[in-house]
Length: 306
Image (tube, rainbow, N blue to C red):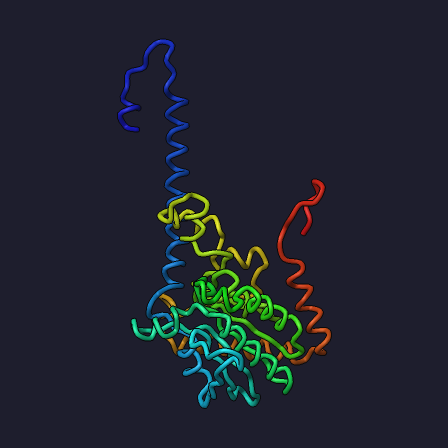
């Protein structure tokens, strides 16, 4: 650009306008790169290996937690943790995705990607909570449901859709908190709740950035661009109305202070449960269904609908 400006002015040759256009475009590109970096920083924070997982929050929030295992059909899936907990004078059902800290734990928990039996376990626990009038808390942190052949053979898609149906029909108060990655239907299966809350540095999208880039640009290296296009940050999703609230994290991220992050979620949970418990179950259910029905924008016959 400096060299262009130094070129001598020739009769009939007008470089000034072209130089201005190029300068403006360079400013736009640099701005796009900064936006891209900010978005990717959020992706990396959501995936940070020291970020608190479901069991970490349970440790700080629910002493005396009793884990319940198995789907009563095939097996127990360690990628989803669930059980009963005492909380502020009430009993609640806590269900969440669980990743592992070391390689052995990650393999055992399938990197937090549930199989069908995981979702069926979650359904069993939610139905149990509904039977006894116990509120449900879900903690969401998964790259997505496990896409392997064995999972498909055991009905992965059906298990996810049944989880959605189960949550839609619950009479008890439900709160979902996206604590890390909220990936695709694997996350949504536990997120059809009365209140959907998201931590500041969590992400939530219909597909992972890498998979999106591989499909749209045939190159997983374009994941940074995909992440920006997906609008998966908490700020984006709050603006779109896909989440009800965004919770601040401890300075530097939740991985810096697990106890402080748990305290923030605990306070938000109590506030939302008090509000939801004051509502009639049928009114609460209607509000839940209407909230999800109103999400999204589409066109029909040239008319944009919301």
